[in-house]
Length: 339
Image 1 (tube, rainbow, N blue to C red):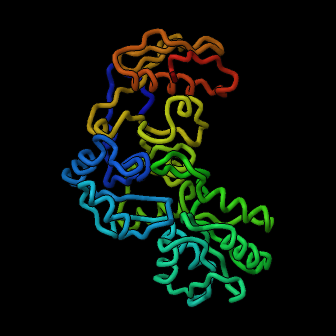
Image 2 (cartoon, rainbow, N blue to C red):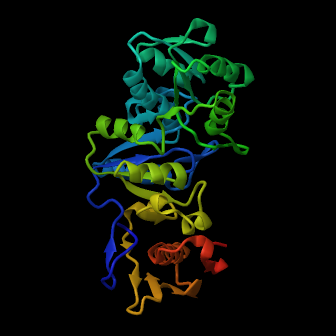
Image 3 (cartoon, rainbow, N blue to C red):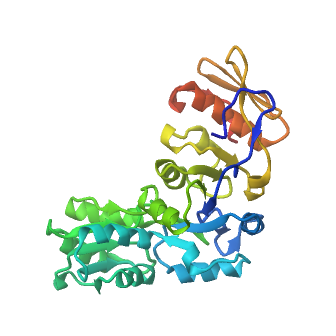
């Protein structure tokens, strides 16, 4: 959508034709305790221009009201109903698997247990209560005892298992820490089973958001290719990648086909800027974005002209590599594209 084109000087805009903007949180709105520069102003502008703004998070440790309160502290106008959490998506899955009023063993915190209760299920923390299902989500307090209870319950093949998400890592104030995927993997190793997953990159969480916000043509802004971009593409949403979080130039250049965003932005101010479409020379050697030029001859990918903006150089590099149909592993890529 955003990266390829033929007409010289052609531009598009990231929000053309969009009726709702959905945003990830960590790496998009905030990093640690602070808001990411320009994110709050940009998202407030999106809302001021009449688009519905929603927030989607795989982090299961907090309730929607807690997330909304946190975002409001940054200056965003956010209510609980503007936040879609992976526990909410997990409950949509649970309703298809269980009878109303079933007992569910919860491995996680209040963000998960509160949704289980709101969905009409009975919360337990012990496998001895004969739960019909286990639901697992991240919380800092989850440890061996909780994982063991899940394993005890899941040795019965009749017990359902739903994970809010399987992110391998989670960004925190001190750096990158193990995420829910590592905890799910520990239980998987013990029981030899895999859960049904509700959060990104699966589509359930996006379906919940689209219905809640009555969105027909939503855009999703994320910072991770393996969850945000892949999930948005699977759900048929416009995928916008912002370079303020986890995945940067090197990951984008190497992105597999199912994880390639439609737009690449330095920061959220560029939501409102014209987006230059990549052009290819007649001989197919040069890819041009703005004043940046990348050449591709055989397996050699080189910077011909860096241009005025590093983000345009990255866009050109991605367009050249992605359009070649070649795996990144067989290419010799100029370090200037990612260093």
